[in-house]
Length: 436
Image (cartoon, rainbow, N blue to C red; front, side):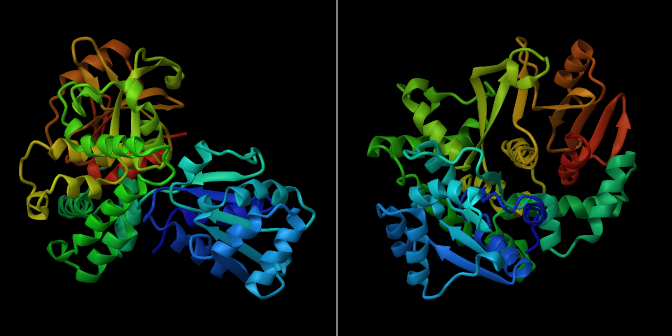
């Protein structure tokens, strides 16, 4: 399955391979698959070490001996001498060994040409709770996400549409009505299955959205909830992690347009859930969008720490947790959560290139997302349907006079009244052309 991160891996090989690479991301998003493919294609030799399965390697690095002896014992455990000049080592589930993570500094500074790549689920959580000396500046970290809509089109063998989408986006040129409707259908399919590779593979195999095996996503959710019991300080923290996670679908429809701890239970307070919130954010299982107190650059300098939204990392997981029927999505029926799905989908597309921010005024006007690029701060409004009526966007544009605005909806491409119309299926283009 073709993934965008592959190009990033090749760039690391060509320009920074002397520095170990660490790939962060939630479980089940395809990290192991794509890194294995990269190692097989780009190197004459590679060694795959899964630290969950090869516990003896974890034990070796815990021994009170120097790093040279540890590497020699690792070779003995593997049963052969490693040609480090021509071999890349892939440590998977590296969060299982704090000692190996600490050793990345040695691998980086050594005169031996070590080539090290590592990945793992909950790696962000492990790093945040690191007890040893983390090799700051001696490791390159990158984040991988579930498939975005462009990758979904690749997987569905519909790459032919991508160049046309990008052309229409750049030129504000209307897409053929027939193709526009076809692409909206693919967008709705994506709302159903999301970007988890196993769900997309199920759709590939069945070629019918109604025949997709929904137990796949259900099992992924169970695995996510199970993960919440790993690397926690106590059982209470695990319960709080799960409580926050399970509250997100209902909170996305909250009229206050912000996450409220009191919605978890009546006695819940932010101070009681801050550790759990950090855990979920570090695990990459949720996405945070901060409210902006003042529309000024840099956006991060004007966030309101107490006002934010939380999204799930994958729109297919949201669809599953809401127990929505695929038929209702595909038939484009009207239901209350239709706008929530669209906004969550846009959040998962935008997070790949920038942190998320939104704006609220005292009179309850709201802009779903704010983009900061060479043209300044650009407001982004999300609509599930064609409806162009937007008091909030009009109010914002009159007040702040942005260079232009973006409206993401079911409407075709266009540019009118300084508003760029972007169909929902073209959201990925923003990351190509509007984010600097």
